[in-house]
View 1 (cartoon, one colour):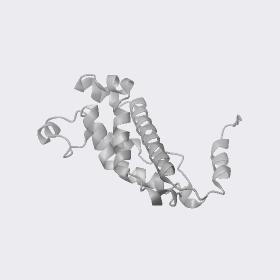
View 2 (cartoon, rainbow, N blue to C red):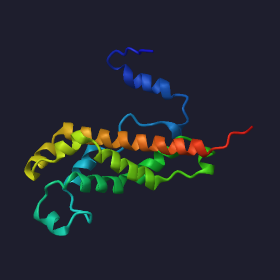
View 3 (cartoon, helix red, strand yellow):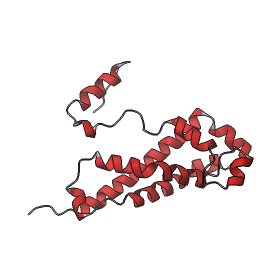
View 4 (spheres, rainbow, N blue to C red):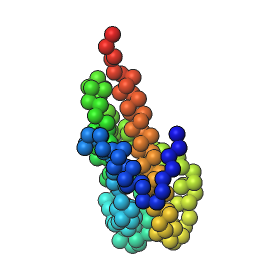
Length: 167
């Protein structure tokens, strides 16, 4: 099925599609991790970075450190919210969702993106310049959410496998 939309129809279509969905099930049109949060994380000194490095430079950390920082700060809440929005409490009575595993998986999936790894692996000056580009922020955020959704899907599959259907 192909849906053709004219300019300005997307918000109205979204309203029509979600009109009968319970309020707690509605998903936002925009991701909940705004690009400004990523920008702030790129330049903010944090305990995850050595203090001397954070004071000496405002250069973005290596991809592994940055991804760990973003996942540590955002993943557990995002994963719990998304799994909770599924309204699948019965499914998860048998096997509780492992949010920590979802977050470990998310981090691993992001770090397996070879394009992102190569893109991030330029010198620190080049990295700072590249990561200030809107396209870089959008790509990283999209990759992060793709990884999170993929890892949540795996966790949901585990819950469904453990669920006992009545006979």
